[in-house]
Length: 371
Image: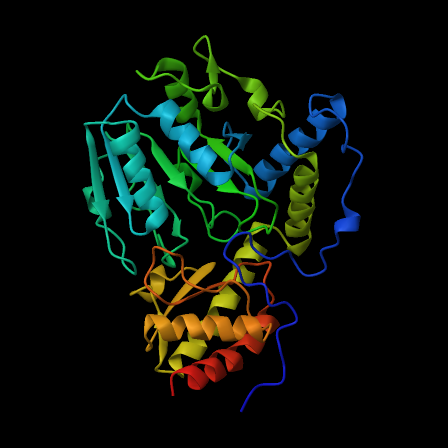
């Protein structure tokens, strides 16, 4: 029978992700609106966003955080354009975004000394191929495949190369081994449910040393410039952004950080996301028509959960449309490059009660369309 109880919040998009329960736009500080981001007030709020990120993520001493243009993509491109070229590069990919970084290295930067290791959707590549003397690029969580890195033991503690990690759907949702990461990027609109257009760039002291000792062979656009006269532009990491940010988005990000703090910090956010994933794990165990796209339980994402169904691509599309029409679940179709299926966000901004209310509707929609 058609269920009667609907999720209180049907927003399950994997980006921009839903706001946390109780979010109120009217509660945002608007004192910076209409003010220059270069004003003392503007810089104060930008620096506060940086300082709170460092505090809540418990970053190691000496790590720097900057707010940069272009969301996570802009932050990753900035890192690659500014840091790569000194050493050979190993790129590990298992979904569309990781494959995009491999394409950039091969076709945009045109690096001849690059190796690419890939895996099909649902699997991880062979990380044992990583050379500690090479720079390494990888995503922590494959947003479009629902497959995450379950450990980084393959990253050497005595490496001489840099590790560059796209962590946009992992930061604040998964335990990050910061000592293994030299560069990390993420965006506000993922795990925190913030607004888009801004990226976060995290640099280790080793990454800073590379920036100050190496100059790439190619021109660096102004919007990617992290150094001047072979010295790090410290202002970027103290609130003096490269270009004009949206101060409304900054205040929204600060509000999200405050929510994380009130939740109990990053560990509490991780626990909530993992509890959300457990809702799906139990559901899949009881239903043979749906399964995780991830082939191993330990690599199953607890944010961007991807599912494969015993259904044709056309039937999957019809199921998604039916749930949307019923106002039960919005934006849960698989990413355009991924196999046909469902993708449901279950990060900490999603309430477990909404996921539990969604489950009977998934069954109803499947049986309506397929059986």
